[in-house]
Image (cartoon, rainbow, N blue to C red):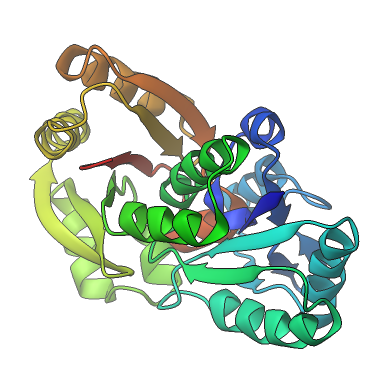
Length: 283
């Protein structure tokens, strides 16, 4: 059988990952000298609690030995492995997994292994993993499964809005002048991901207006797939995620919605209060 593996940035709810048999490799969260495994030895709630107290953790990819051990465990069970990695333009995980798989192929030549750059993150990768797991369970051949994933990678969408730019200022991702001006004018940047990199596509004044604008963008881009599962993530702001679900349900009434908190690795970079929507423009 083919096992779908993702890293912990995929933001799949644990129940969904278990339902589809998707395996997760945790990235690392660092707080001072202490190192944690994302969602395994530290919870997302704990990370956000520290951030609210002014502590800004840092993050790192999984170690090579750790990745090797976890993948080898699956190969010993007779599984073929398809790994969907966090965007290679935002993390070194994809290249790490490729190197690990190259070593493992010499020991398990009878097994099929493939690492794909999802060119995405958060629930976008999670949605691709869900579709891949369904296809694998249905008996899709390994090469066809790779082709299917490559198609989905090319058609997955991310649209999200940042509530408080102070976190991006602290992380050095935007200038202090830009961030403080935007906060003063109540400007909320709307971003998406193009070819694996985040970019600002619009700037809207006011929280509610920004949520409505995101919902409008999603509805327009998802028009060709009106009955899909849409992922909604939030950074410690469940009420905003619920509001987004309501706005989307008005525009895309035949879609299903899953809500999950943005994991620690991405939450550290985007800060508290962001809301993201993830979906396919073609399937």
